[in-house]
Length: 99
Image 1 (tube, one colour):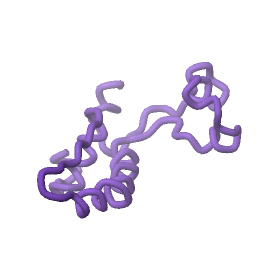
Image 2 (spheres, one colour):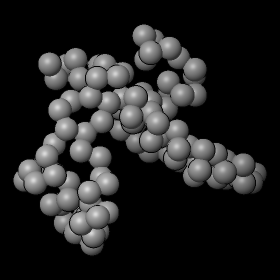
Image 3 (tube, rainbow, N blue to C red):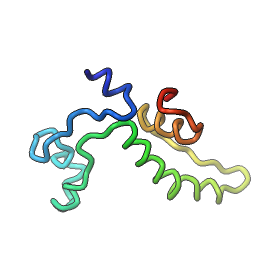
């Protein structure tokens, strides 16, 4: 089942419960967020959801940075496998089957 979730575009894994000990809100990294902000954190996502999130970041953050790059400068984008798959899907115009 895990392999299906990891390779599927549309099917997300089961969402984690807000009160589960492994919910990211219990990570010290997010301790400064209000409970309302924590409730908006993803509790799991499909590749389709990752792609949508990556597309917003691409359009709002990365693309404007690329447009302002001067000679001899570059923009470094660092990510992990599934965000990269979503970005390739977006930028290469791949079908769901191809990704």
